[in-house]
Length: 196
Image (tube, rainbow, N blue to C red; front, top):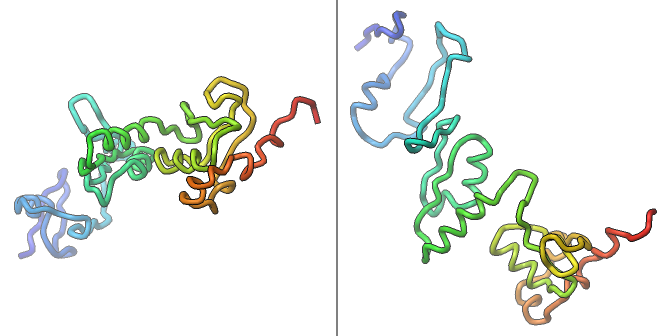
């Protein structure tokens, strides 16, 4: 049945469309996906600056874009939540972890993330092993770590160990041999006490 509808005082010709209106689709109270919608271009009688996509997640929390990732174990962990936040949305980390501490660790990874900055890095010392770096990568997702004199933030920076230094060392080899990071990285050459 073709019938015109009122929209902000404008009469829309439904003969150009097929299917149902948004109100008709929402009345079914069934789950909908992006594939259920075809959004057709049309005339609007307001400027784009008047469009607000802000959405309340909670009473006190708003996001600028209505993008929320599903809290499913196949969809949202820390990586997805970080990307969602970078694009103005939010990722709800799933609850299918063996222990609540595991879920809290995923949330902590997101909270610690600052684009381009790691505010509380996990440092290594000269005595650290490749196994230590692989553990940092596995547990926190970092692909590099600063090497300091005593392995703590605030002590003298000696260099950096990056993923290219240890990517070809397997967890078994690193764990069995205790390969020192000085064998896989030339971090001492990064900094010099004398001017060059």
